Image: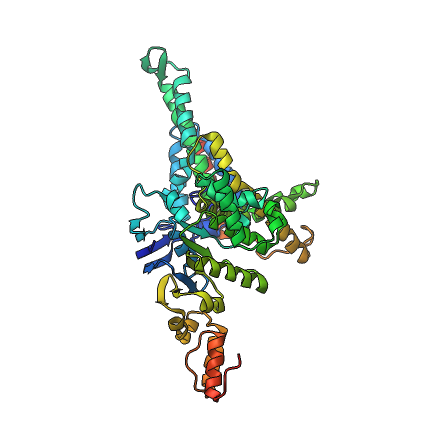
Length: 264
Length: 284
């Protein structure tokens, strides 16, 4: 029941995109977002769509998986679409019922903004689907390293992030187990009004918190026992290296930005 | 209330790259009054099977019939089922949440709709069955030791008075004394008329208290029989990465060394057999 969370779930296959350096992937994702915002017209959506399909192909990801990532957004998407559709001023009236007017401009804006949302989510999910969380935080740490000079705790932040990410599946599994254990004792998580449901969560949340704190304590102890003392002088198991593939990927994104900038 | 498992399969995360077959073609019946031990190597599907017995997991194919009724059929009342088939999870001490032991044990029966004196009687009776010090009843469960917490969790399930009790490695991680005590409690519950399914890695306990043993190997039911039948097939068990009870091991060694002994399951039997073989009287 808690297994349907795809956000940030790594998809374990081998591919061109999986092999890319995480730093490059992060930078390229940001560049992709820039391209999405550059593409103002509906025409600009075409190269971006093509690019996403190409990237999904190069990443060996089924398109279905990408679309599944949009599902939680469906309410926001519909809302964005309708809001823009009805409240954009314009001259070319397509449909007018009583005080509600749908204009051509409105329809265009509505499509543009909803598409933009879809692009942003799918683009970002390609990053998380093809990069293991630990590698991702590794890349972030390296990218943030220049900031460490002005006292920004880059390493600590990255470490905290990787620990948090590492424990999401563990805690989900734990929550699932405790939930089942309480259901075996007749607990009911699914029916009742809001207050009853909130109350029904107590038998789940108390053990979950207790075990989260216990795990945190254990982990801190285990890290200290292995002489962890922060980022200084720490060497790494995975040394990040830029390869030819990274240059190819950069070129592809650069081309996308150029095309969308021209089309507008 | 027999539980009949018919050609049951279970696949985790079917259709994703994480797909894994956990159970394949499981087919057997848990009879009334059984103390069925479920043994198997880590990852052989024991816990998965256990969770099918009260409908927490739904089989990918096949059926589970409790008292003749398919528990996964449309409209089946799973909450009522879970009161008849109790399940104690692995490391069950982590499921405790109430302020006092009393309230935690009362959680299950309260969900059954009991209140007042009936509830109080259930809680006290369950508490008595797990042999905890009397003053523990009003303590916070988090003040107790790990082994005591485990017994509170067991009491929480026992308090629902299930006809079948499924215990997933109830003695894992306990010290020898706690292990013996808990095994004793399980034995007493069984003698009190509860059908028990016990998942265990401790073959000595299995040999001592089980009436039947089911062996799972890589998601399949490899053997089913009395402890005596199962543990006489020591070589096959070892090939599956399983132990045989120490008594059985000793018996086999002695036989390999040239002694003429029958298959023995318990210490007492082995003692008698050795004495008989040596032509002496039994002093044990």
